[in-house]
Length: 303
Image 1 (cartoon, rainbow, N blue to C red):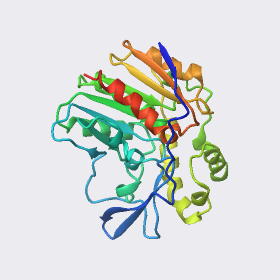
Image 2: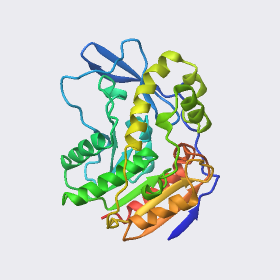
Image 3: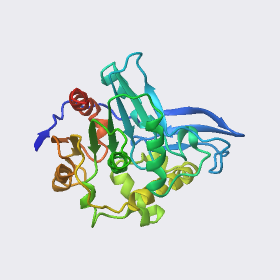
Image 4: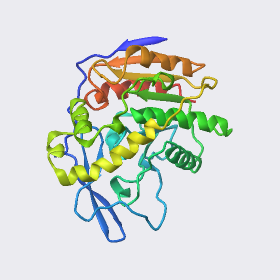
């Protein structure tokens, strides 16, 4: 096992709700959405017309962010609870030009705001696998932050159980190993006020968003659905994955421990590397360049 400590000098200024407010560029029926992406990638519709309900046709769970003409490999990213594909906006600029970049966009956010968000992990895993199966064959890696780490890990296991091609490498970030979740706080059980206090301490939602009741009323159902989905996970012992696992953690993140991050080593029969970077739970934004430099290096071995 290799443990590395990142340098605090490689920082980038995280986006704020004010600087990343964008139109979601979609209309579902009569509902036109506007997306506001916070520092965490919590994506929410802003506007009185937005609502959760049925849609006329299914949408893709995987969104292309960069598609080179002759790709060598593919990186598929899964965001934290409440997040969407816009969490990974700008990542392609810091990855090799011949790497495809895709991100998960589940119902209830961004261009899918009119759909009901899933609240069980099984409701997320199968559509992601279906999306992967529809892509052209290519060596690929999975990256997941926070809840996205759990989703990516479970997808890798499910691909194996179905005899489908699995990832050449698994990147997980900001989440203790799945066998170590006992005793972790159940955020989905907190009332709105308590949950907002926790997220504020984690720099999860900017103060200007928390102070906007209309916006919060749109964010909370998506966030709670995602938290409930993560908390529905029940770990079962299985053989380690064949692919290498790269783990990232923030050295000031109160949601993870060094032992919990290191315990991911039990989930691979191949190479394992743990890197601790300066920052809290959302170090993936403040340390984006350092993080992507490490991902870029490890993608070189993705086959």
